Length: 231
Ligand SMILES: *Cc1c(COP(=O)(O)O)cnc(C)c1O
Image 1 (cartoon, rainbow, N blue to C red):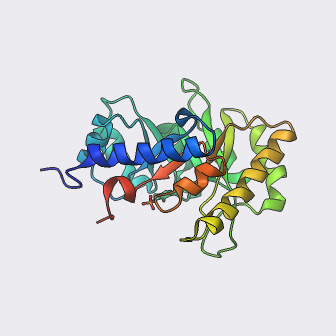
Image 2 (cartoon, protein in one colour):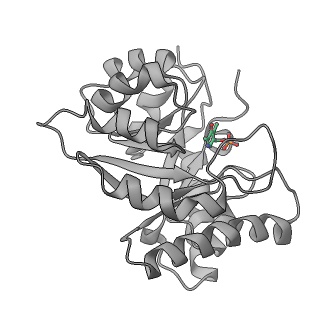
Image 3 (tube, rainbow, N blue to C red):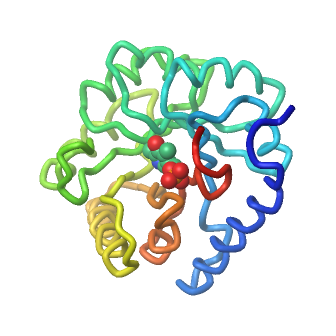
């Protein structure tokens, strides 16, 4: 029996329509925003149902929980993103099994991801997590340290620096949500004006993805709005 929402196709379509509408309001094409399904705490059959709905990008947050799901969905052409905090002793497996890593915030971790990236695989796509909003509980590199870290990570072999990611404080007011995302958007523009070729702004979750799209998000990480509250 499928655990999880029975109306997943409708939920997926509703989120896709909200993304398209937010993009249109910002004068952007719906195709400029990738929907990543954040699937932590969801069992493999829910991921399979999401793949049946046409979703291709899946984000997992905990390596031990993720690996059986990657195995269970081997028969599908999916792109796997590691979106959780990265422990130094897990970097080899992450580099071997995932296409993208979103929460890199130290050079040491980036180097530990680059070294074991298999030579038969394309370079590992990486985003740097930036500490936006000042909450002590949230990770990320501080904005002042970002340019040096970005240059160092971009110079590593076997890895491609694609962009920036953030998890700002929860806000219900759209103007305040947008202010946090605008900070990340400005850092992104500034790095690109310094010659880095970033194309990914990974920002926005169920409660704030429309505000993120208004501020330039190219990838939104959505769990609850697709799957309902996590068990
Ligand atoms: C869980 C998670 C999400 C999705 O959160 P929702 O509020 O359920 O949409 C997005 N990004 C990260 C890093 C997560 O851990």
